[in-house]
Length: 430
Image 1 (spheres, rainbow, N blue to C red):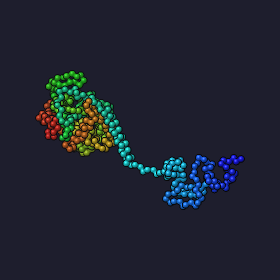
Image 2 (cartoon, rainbow, N blue to C red; image 1 turned 45 degrees about the vertical axis):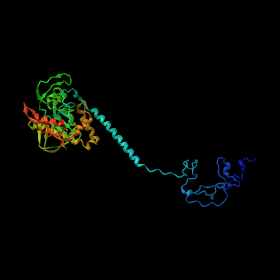
Image 3 (spheres, rainbow, N blue to C red; image 1 turned 90 degrees about the vertical axis):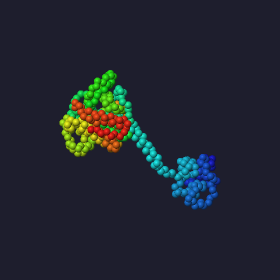
Image 4 (tube, helix red, strand yellow; image 1 turned 90 degrees about the horizontal axis):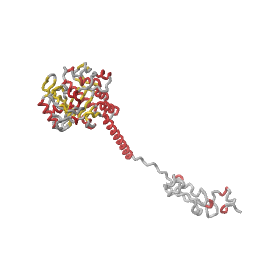
């Protein structure tokens, strides 16, 4: 009895028949492995030489015959067993004839677009975050709706900018260093009207010793109506009596100019802003000293730090006690401060921008309707005062009474008319 499948004999297992085929018309492998289907073996003949450009798959004549095209196409890079369709042998089912596909070239235009879009998203996110951070720092404490009997608003925007002698947040060492003294409360150390219009910005200083009438007003805290008594006094007394609301009411009453926004900064914040931007370069035409303010300046160009800057804008006794000379120095310094702050080296440098904004916004007091956009417009208008069509001047003065400066009513009326109509200012001040 033959135990070998399909008529196998011991001769079939002998080592000398492997790879030599048999006399059967079916290949030996196909008889043993029924699941492998191979085509019938072609007649024995000498194989044709392999094609150079289109190699044919190897054919097997009854086994692994070295003369039956075994290495046909082997050196062409074709993977053994490849074909025109994927069958799971050799080509991984790709159907690409066994050839390995190269990596496609990178799409640089797409990468650049994605990179640019990502950059825009990051810049937008940082800008929005900065806006809300800065907006949260503004102290909107002044309510202009409490101001009564206001004049009609004209063209352009009018800002009342006040530098107070507030010492809030300052230590005893700070007060000594900045020569501010330790007086309680706060008073206005400087007052200016900044008009921002189509004919260029105009900065008008209001001497704190200006002789003005205190009009009727509503108490900012009590809401009580105080009637006018025909009382004339220094302009800074209005602030000391009932704060920013009465100061705005007094300025509007004596000028006829509508104030749109109010901005106030104290001693400490002023010095911090200057130090945050690395100082302000200023050309001082004449040397001067003032023990009360701590001023000690030589003539010529120099960079002032926060302490020196505060001394510069506060000095008055070095100029024979004249408030007019002091206001001119204040205008000159503020224009230089704005010009040197609004530069790419500050705006585009977060290590300078955020400390500068933080120092200023922490101490700024503004009206309740003031937005960051309004504040930015004011800042750039201040920068333009000394350039282009900008104008800076003192309120026109006609004389003095009891040590107070009297405004020139005719010139003031003309100045206010030009500002209200947003015309080119032709009035000259002192």
